[in-house]
Length: 269
Image 1 (cartoon, rainbow, N blue to C red):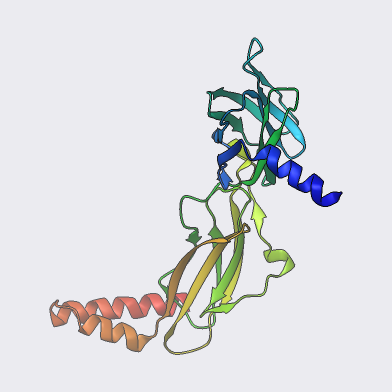
Image 2: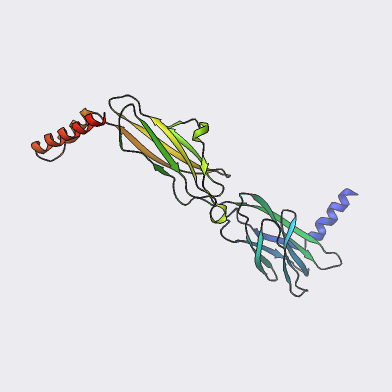
């Protein structure tokens, strides 16, 4: 009995089908997303086309009714409109300003008395990608051994907001409670920028360099990562002497300039 029922359903649905369902994988909450459903009716007559977001109907096209199109706004989404023809139906929706994943389904049905149904579903995630790399603020090119440098990394606006990680010489820095990722106020479409500070203790070395890097990680699948880096160079009197002697200026100017730099260093130290 069960086998007979399965065969009967397959026979009923073989005369028509959905040939293509287009649903964007990602949708920007600042722009309307366009979804389209293409179908083939063969010898069947189209009764209606319905669009669903999860379990809620959001759009209906019934060519025998006037007006043929009806819109159903549900919580968190606005249906802007649509257009349907004999073999396709398109709907435009404004995604909610929340990083969420939802199922969008297209359902077509034939005229009675059988009202046979075909349905396909795809998922769309609300995401606003960052357009720029993060920015590091407070990174001097030259640093003194033993001092403390306070850096700030700020990401571009995105949805969901990015998580920020700091690296020193490719070593991930532990996130202390007072150094957690902070968020700005929401902008258009719910987008936020992220920022996180890092305190860098400069080692008491005579020379060398520190490489710092921050990553802005957008928690989506697959993850989107943008980064920025800076190099902090430890200066010493030896380095200053080499720098000055290698310039193309006269010897008298080099000595005067070197003396001036030493005096500045003595005062700052």
